[in-house]
Image (cartoon, rainbow, N blue to C red; front, side, top):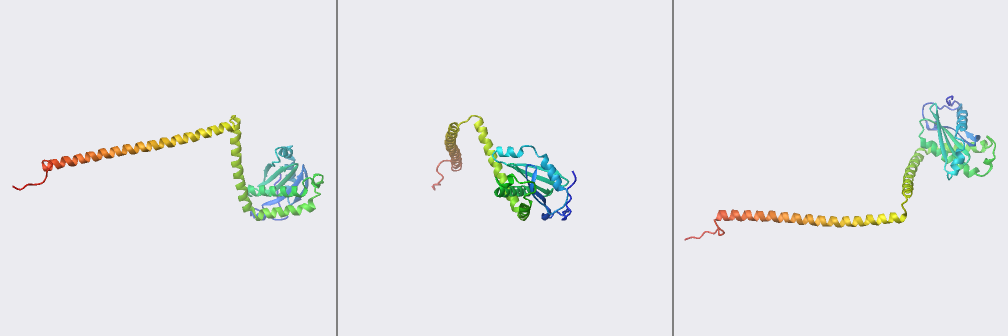
Length: 250
């Protein structure tokens, strides 16, 4: 593949935000309905080739899986070609390789939500290639600008969402494993009761052990005290040669 070489508007190695997202489109199947770019180059042709290479049936498979979008990404000459497939439509954005992944993800999600809100179940289902370019091309531009202006905020939000999703998946996986072992809720409740009883018994044992330890310490202290008193008594008798240390004058 030839490298995307923007020329209409300089997109050099400077890495400015305005040059992060250089091309985007919405397609139904392989027919591009609307696109937008401020640059010139061969990236539209490369993006079209990537669109042709997407796994067949990805959009329908995502719809069958409860509407979850499918994501694909291709790399070419320091650029990434990012796709989001949902309900028969493909959303694409071409970005510099150095652009944070969450920026492209945020743009594609925003583009998908807006396009479905405007055209879902409407004329987009029968529209010809490029027929929505005039009315929706400027909207794509607005979404690009919004994402670039709020890139840091969107990046943080998506990271939090990813963490929440990870925790949710772990919980669901644990539930599936539990159900897979055939453990019913009643059995789990019994186990919980057993654990509670064991905890109470452990607490009682702890109290007994602490009490026993205290008594042993007291015994040791009393023995030591007795020994000290005995030593004092021995010294007293030795010095006084008896129990009476008073001197009597004759």
